[in-house]
Amino acid sequence: MTVPAVSRPVPSRPAVDADAVVAALYRDHGGTLLTFVLRLTGGDRPWAEDVVQETMIRAWRSAARLDPAASPMPWLATVARRIVIDDRRRRAVRPAESGDTPLEQFAAREAAQELDALLGRVVLDEALASLSAAHRSILTETVVRDRTVNQAAAALGIPVGTAKSRVYYALRALRAALEDRGWRSAG
Amino acid sequence: MNPPVEHTDVAAYALGVLEPGDRAAFETHLASCARCRDELAALAPAAARLREERDARQDTT
Ligand SMILES: [Zn+2]
Image (cartoon, rainbow over all chains, first blue to last red; front, side):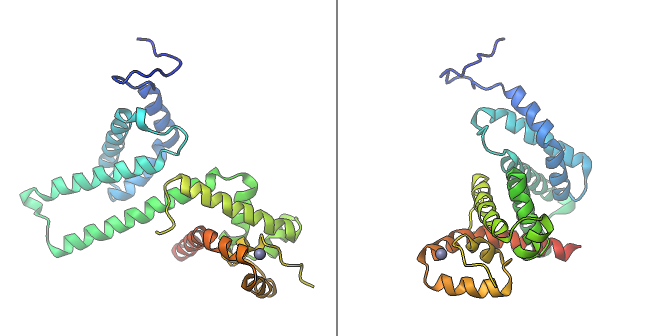
């Protein structure tokens, strides 16, 4: 089987090498995804590994539709989360642990909120990681360390005016990076 | 004593990292600068997201 170097409009099969796409996903994001899923499974590692594997199988099937320019992490996290929720639902219908009491519904809602917060954190971390070192460091030295721009300028040994304009370009870059990852300011 | 206000100070203002004197000077500027008001509206959500995350992580440590 030969894979054409240039994608051709063949509708019946994807023009991308799905195996290579998934191998790259495992290599670049497998560890992060497993850490994320472990939180969702409450530390159940065999379950988490199954979820990561199933997520990668779905990524393999969807490889042609994944945008190679965008970070795949939000997509992977969303799919993994859906798999965990489906697993929970399947377990809940088993008679031994019949699961629709108000307490369990509350717990499920809490878990869903925690997952959303986690996903938001993953997106923010990825957005920050995508910035230039200078942009990331000026945001770290000011906001993250809770210092004024003058204090950060002194710490970095740069003029205050430079620090202020760097904050400006860094925040604009961060906003663009967040939006690239599907973040919407509404919440 | 304070350096003059620049339009680009809007980001440091949105992030809450201006010195008190600069913050007051920028607010005076903001009252008369539509461009900075627009930019503040555009940058505020990302700035808020970053501050919120900083606060959340401080709470857990
Ligand atoms: Zn202005």
